[in-house]
Length: 147
Image 1 (cartoon, helix red, strand yellow):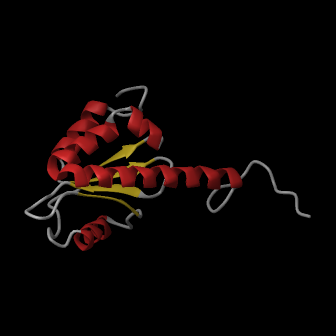
Image 2 (tube, helix red, strand yellow):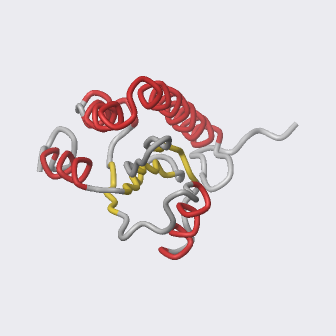
Image 3 (cartoon, helix red, strand yellow):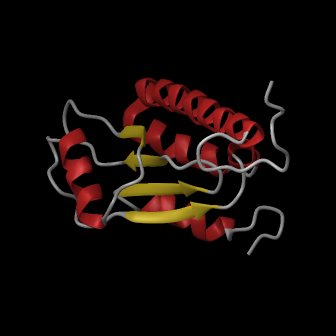
C-alpha cells in the first residue's frame, strides 16, 4: 500500500494492464469511470463516465448497450480510488490508463481520455460545491438564515 495515495499502485497498474473491462469507483463522486479495452477492426477502446450500477447484472447490461459490437464481457474488474481526481493524475494512474488506451486506439483514444478527464474534474468540482452548500445528500454545519 502506498501511504501517499491510499492504494497499492503496482496492483492498480496491474489491473489496468490485465483487464478487458474496468470500472473505477471514486471516493468523492457517485459516478464511475468505465474503461473497455476490447477492440476489433474498426472499433477502438472505449472510456466513459457512467452512473453507479444497481447490480452486477445492471453493469453488464450497461456495457452491452454501450458496446454492442462486443456483447457481454467475460468479467469486469474494478478498484476503488480513495483520493481526488487530481491525485489520480498526480499518482501516474491516469497516465497509465491513457497509455494503454493510446496503445490500443491511437490519437482518437487519447483525445477521448482528455474529454473524460475534463468530465471527471467537473463532476468532482460540482460534488464539492454541493457539499459546501449542503445540497442533496449533504448536511451543512450551519443553518441558512431565513429572511
